[in-house]
Image (cartoon, rainbow, N blue to C red; front, side, top):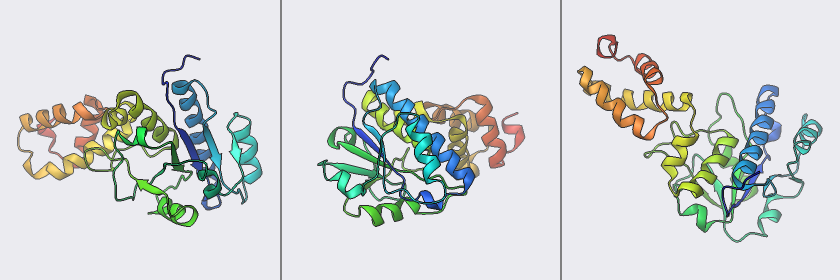
Length: 239
């Protein structure tokens, strides 16, 4: 496989909250971890520095280990603090952190930790709880797009891709746009339309918003129309 990036950081998936997952969430967790490994290998040429770590316990532990190990993903059954002691500049990605992830972070940190959590519906601050329980001294940052986490892909594989493509482009927003799904784009477009709804009076207003949003969202006309409908914008302005 052709290696795209010459420098690839370690990426750790912390599954310390595995016992919180329902069966459907657990299956999604496994899927996201495996897709993340494939993304890492595609961009870095191998998956040696993409690892799963923590003491595993709970109903799905044996199945999880078998499923993930069969995909050639290393699992380290050690406290995460111990594993991080071998690094000098770890960074935990937490959507509820105060500080914001920037392009310089991919060069100034040697390992990134992603919370191995899939919660449907989202349980607020579960990643923060995981960080504070397991490695409270580790720096935390959130990935945002134009000042908000709305529309930033939350999946483990997507976060992995954003980190690596930030290295590739040296641009977080470009990495997010390149990674986001149409659904992510629709969610963010809806969010932006609701904020601006009172100022949307004409067809030109709608066109201008579409032109602006499509510069930094993975947005096409069909996805934008769905966002308009969901946001309650009068049909005569966009039909």
